[in-house]
Amino acid sequence: MDNGLMMQYFEWYMKSTDPSLWSTLKKDAAKLSKNGVTSLWLPPAYKGADGINDSGYGVYDLYDLGEFNQKGTVRTKYGTKKEYVEAIKALQDEGINVYGDVVLNHKMGADEMEEVNAQEFNESNRYQMIGEGKTIGAWTKFTFPGRKKKYSKFTWNWTHFDGIDWDQDNLVKAIYKFSGKEWNNEVDLENGNYDYLMGADIDFDNKEVFDELVNWAVWYVETTGVDGFRLDAVKHIPASFYRDFLYSVRNETGRELFTVGEYWNGDVNVLTEYLSAIRSEASLFDVPLHYNLYHCSKAGGSYDLRTILDGTLVKANPVKAVTFVDNHDTQPGQSLESFVEDWFKPMAYALILLREGGYPCVFYGDYKGISHNKIRSKKQLLDKLMKLRKTKAYGIQHDYLDDPDCIGWTREGDEEHKDSGLAVVISDGKGGTKRMYIGRQYAGAHFSDVMGNAKYNIKIDDDGCGNFYVNRGAVSVWVRKEPK
Image: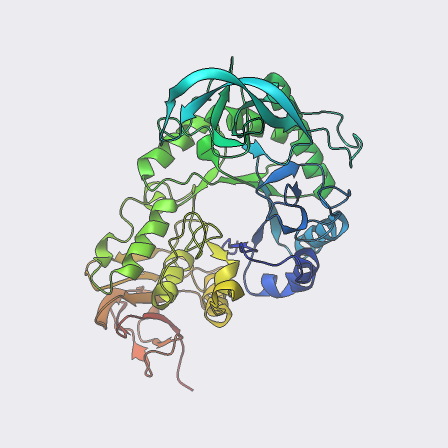
């Protein structure tokens, strides 16, 4: 089989005035497949509280995929339901799987307010109550008048939530927990208990909530044909909910449904504990690796490259790690801003695309550029690395992570992919040459640096080793190329 490669096909500042993302995707499907993309993570497809300007994370109506006149618009930021379904079909026809972004932690933009007894809690310590309980005006009633109960008759009220961050009666912003409710357990320990994130916080202990969300997910899979899910903000949601949710949805649809969760924590032990707790077939984004790449890019050559994979999920559990360089949350101006410096992007992407561990995800903002921040497209570079992953990055891997300024690895290639096999050398400081073993089957063969840093070929010796060169602060990828 060819190597898997995911792409996150959106960035935060895409404009609703741009051509429909879904329509653009339909046109791009064949090119993406040709360049080695095997799956796409698409943005939330349902109507958000901010209508056409909502990126999809301010969830209003899960059933409105750009079909109903709600929040001042029929289409979402990315297009209409018809365009969405057509784009998915076009991608699948090109052999590309589609993963839908599932945002279940909260809801926003309620249709009606309710008077609810609640207590205010310390934002930094969610177990510390502030003052006495009181009645607040809470935006918690969701009736979806524009949809008129099509697809689901379920309406949401305050009993389906744990809390909220706005008291309409007194126009006060604070964290309120509803009387008789408890923050969900099995969540991240940041702020004591990180159940509450934003909006009307969904109560995952409520049986009506569980049944409705499973019903929605089954409808969503059957309506759109998506092949899997990207789960948003799982650190704020009990692991047992997703354990039971995924089991139920897979059972009812009869689909495997690849699933990757976003648990934003730089401690690999927290991630591995979550994977154990969820007890379900699921992966996680490798947040610790992202931070290693980011810190390396900011260190100006003083980072110890021998440690670049230390404390990462791809090292601890390579089968469950979805590796990435950046995403919509880490891009400039966003809540988790930690954008890998431009000079280090080629090395960072080589690390996730050309090694055997992990399921790499390329970011749209790197691939297409981010006009909002005047960040240029790296499409030419990424197409080259993606093609190398598709055609060359196979076989036994040999690591040479043995120098603070210069590391490398080789892949021996396999019989299923003709002329596969490669050698990669990375430097964040001074360049140099690394003697690495690539396989005795290459004895006497010539290799060339396809990145264009070394202008000469090298010859593999009788022991299957070669002296592979890299420039200062660069990456070289050596593949077999016999002189004419």
